[in-house]
Amino acid sequence: MPADAPKIVPLTTVDAQQVLAIYQSGIDEGNATFEHQAPTWPEFDAAKLPEHRFIAKDPDDGKVLGWVAASKVSDRCAYAGVVEHSVYVHPRARGKGIARALLDALIDSTEAAGIWTIQSGIFPENTASLALHERAGFRVIGTRDRIGRHHGVWRDVLLLERRSSQVL
Image (cartoon, rainbow, N blue to C red; front, top):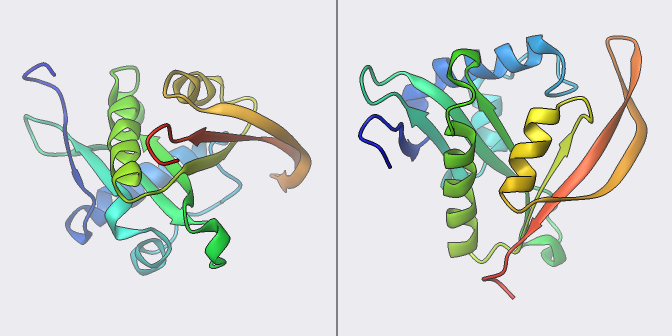
């Protein structure tokens, strides 16, 4: 990685305010999630698996450029190796490989933990995210037609997954 590349480190409470601000920015853009408001830090912290959440920090000023985090999809033992993830990058930091570096960190941590599937739901209009995920080995496995209303409009969601080649 170049010397000026962001540093990928675990996401902790120290960076909560910046992480939630980036999350809210993605929400405000309208093509990242059905959510209207970022959660509180305690809500976010409780929902995300501590060992599978990372941030990208600017090497010069230490500001958070983006984050990735995974959540359990079910408490059922059959789904112990399946997580759902989200990845968000600050608008001014996009197009610099940060999301890919974050996804790579997540893939490494999940495979080390024996997780065999990472999944995500992405709006079809979010073409940048779809392209990123395809490059990282995700594939579209289906479309959830008109799965929910967002600002009064029915939205589809593409279901993507990445199956581990390490965890068999």
